[in-house]
Length: 160
Image (cartoon, rainbow, N blue to C red; front, top):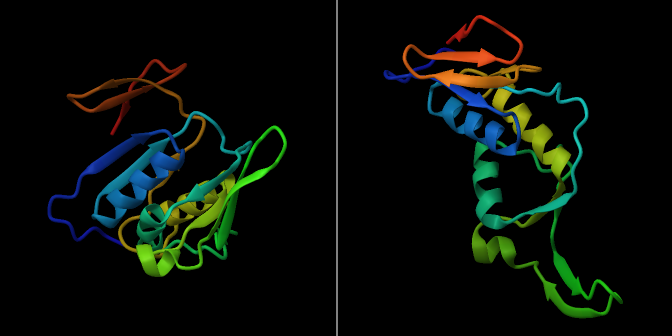
């Protein structure tokens, strides 16, 4: 889809992590062209469980997050325990979170969140031009005028 933004920018993002893909989604939706440079091949993702609080899930849902497809779990309750002996010292019912805060509270695996953000940034349908991800592209220098990126182990700068 062509940009309808009269002042569309060419955005360069270095790093295709959660923040990089989130920025790409926002810029894409604003009508800008986005290139993401990532030094890894994104083929060995690791991570732990994280929570996606209502203030974050509200924005993600507006962007088109598919919590079922991304394997998110809605937090309906939680317990806090002493790590040494697993004694529960706090227990909460969270069923009213969507009504109280305007969006659900999710638990997710970091890799599932990352995969869903990548989908939203690069899918062909949706608002704006899909972001382009350049894997195995370690950026070691940026020169602002004229705009050039220098990748590791290359002599010639990449013009953007």
